[in-house]
Length: 188
Length: 362
Ligand SMILES: Nc1ncnc2c1ncn2[C@@H]1O[C@H](COP(=O)(O)OP(=O)(O)OP(=O)(O)O)[C@@H](O)[C@H]1O
Ligand SMILES: [Mg+2]
Image 1 (cartoon, rainbow over the protein chains, first blue to last red):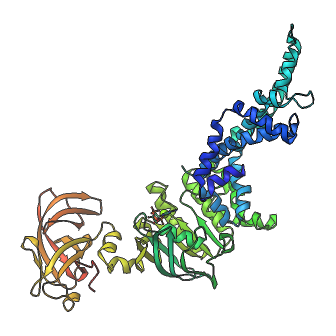
Image 2 (spheres, rainbow over the protein chains, first blue to last red; image 1 turned 60 degrees about the horizontal axis):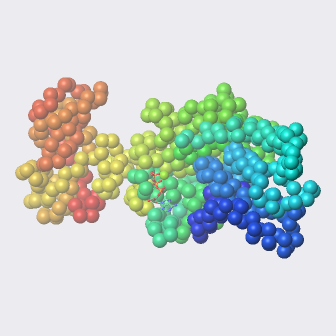
Image 3 (cartoon, rainbow over the protein chains, first blue to last red; image 1 turned 180 degrees about the horizontal axis):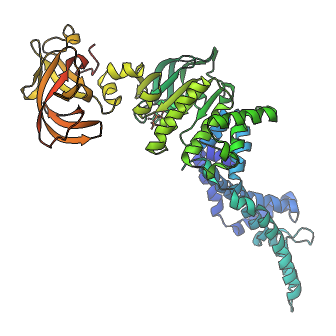
């Protein structure tokens, strides 16, 4: 999030190059990375752990989330933060008290997006996690298929469980998603 | 005491210099209007005073302090933005009280100041609405309210009325003037609308291309423009300009038109000099229509191209020495297009400009 804000508000050298670099990382299919990732993680010993998988997901999601959030902050006129600074805020307060609440909707949707892609991800998870302890739910689904039979009942049950957290999260942030974007303070 | 002084203030964007070493002094409680065409550096100047834009050279002094490197919050100024910049996620009440809350004042004091401001600007009925549910004029008042609750030393306005329709603009103009009388603070006001400048200002500062062209009271800049740019920029309709040449004790214009040299300029001009004669529509009127002239005048015959009746007066578009010029008719009667009338030109009210430097010869 801080990354998106930085891109939207501050002018710094090489901004465009970094930005394009970030987006290019999205152009590489995740599966193509799985083998190199597997080797690196095996060497560093974080294969088949939660920590390892989280690290991979964060790395994969950050560029796109930055890009999304950058877009939301860009929509907020810079005058708002300037007005806040004149009203006595530091740069930091202007961000937390004015810009962040206004962009909440965007940040929330970026959050959901990042959560859902990680939550549902299968290809990488299936290769980087094995043990019952560390595997993710989509990977777990496959345990219900054995050589000759498929336990449909169990699989469906897990699928429902899989959906529930995503549903709950969506409900929680829904309020912000809908009500957040009131750009009435500034005449467009 | 809060006077504002700019000493040789310069602004560069990279290699581009957009404000060229300007000097300006705004006295305590004075209402100064910065006016000029789009892109002349008015907003940049104002934002440098606010601290939203760094300065590339010179000094800015507010009160007795050099504020060159102070952030906006330490300058005790308020600013009203063109697009209002209200906080969309807060109610009107929260918007008004925001600055005091940041300053950690206690709630009773905040409530008192907010109520006071809402009364001055008659916002009482909207206090619990969000800015999105207000009209343009109401938002504008909230923006002004947010600026006054803090009792700042200096108020900065950047084209606060340009998003409003003509009628509301006239109304808000009066409100701003009343506000200044009520709260007695130093105001620096930016606009590109010369009517706002004329009506609001104690002193007008006319800018062009990052320079200050002229400053003075509204009447001074209206009657004695320093150059042709100010002459045409200030006043509506703009001043008529007729290029010509100084002859023997007279002014010669194309098409054989000859006029006497206005008395004030007799000793200044030299024969053969290229000049521009400037006069306002208010000083050339058809004979018999209420132009009182004390001093020299000249009679000119012109045929009216188009007439614009405005009720109490009629604007007459005519041709003189190959230039379109505007004349006025008070106590108007109906004028037929193409009708030829005799006009009286008040020479005492004329200005002469040098044709090459465009500067007033006075
Ligand atoms: N960030 C910037 N980088 C480069 N040039 C800029 C920047 N901001 C403004 N300028 C230039 O500075 C000049 C003055 O701009 P400014 O905004 O002060 O004009 P203005 O007088 O307020 O005009 P307007 O009436 O249109 O608001 C303009 O020529 C503009 O192009
Ligand atoms: Mg401007």
